[in-house]
Length: 493
Image (cartoon, rainbow, N blue to C red; front, side, top):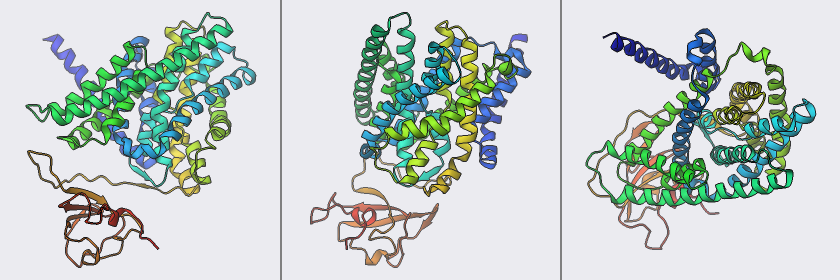
């Protein structure tokens, strides 16, 4: 029975830690510091107070964080969806690849010439700190709605440049011992191979999963979310064993599935959102437990880390990524916000662990420096993101949760049921239902306004932001146009 009691204490301790970390989200809203920072720093403090917590092997940490990133990237891809991402796909891909490369080069050059690090350590630092982090970006932007391209670019970049950064690190470690010319050729070939295989595997896996979701029924509602979760892991594993980027494959698969109409789709999305939130907590807590705050001054990581963090935030990303992003059409304020909100997080810390597994001299110092930079990024950049958005005139507002749902279930896929959001300046904005040119094929059945149900009467006035549930006999009006244009398109002059 002693064994059972001991395990009970373990379960109690772990459960209390998870409860505290979840409740800390309320604290982060008040102090305007992203929750991942609290997880990371809190775990680091705990590991110093209770040294037995810091006994996890580096390889185990890498495996745990890898599984967490699979869940986070797949959920992030589903949240974006191809329909939402398509107008900005080129910009996301360009910033994700070129932006990551120039960031790595800029940090490496500063670490070598400015701080005196050897080229091997400088390149490792630059590569580890080059990608932004989906967990932090999704956490900071998750409950905030950003009008325009800024939010899509940031979320897309965070998902796209992680595979790029991880592939760059794998190439850098794999090219160790090769001569300069051979290392460059090997690196380029390996990078292109990983991106190509990962992209194809993700698109094919997403296409197959989309069809399974629609055409292969399961005996229990609870199995539908588990099927997509298992399939996401299979996509990662297949791409990885084929020599590609498993992280890119998972993100692409999530994007492909994101727009699919499928049975229990809402339940699947809620399940993956919950799993991704848990994965975020686990990833940052596990990574925090590997850090010793007491050792930061001993390994001379604190001041170099702070200097690199400031240079990265105020010089490297604004100048280098700013130059790379010039072909992307953005307002000046949007560009400033995108360059500021390139947050670092779990992925850079994960990449820092590769210094240990590769047997790089001074791996502990590299890892601690990455931790300092990530902490600065999450606390300072993440905490000031809403302020910078306001200063740059990028509309950002917190979206309130809607815990109550009203709906109906059908055995077959319903036809003619559409959900629209009234756009500012559209025909419906400010008009009564009776005055709308709905014709005989479309009628409004339900209106959601700021979380309240509004009666759909002829004299009901619609406002921008209203969510409208409409029934239509046909996909188009008799003139061949989309009836949804009344709600989404601005009226013609």
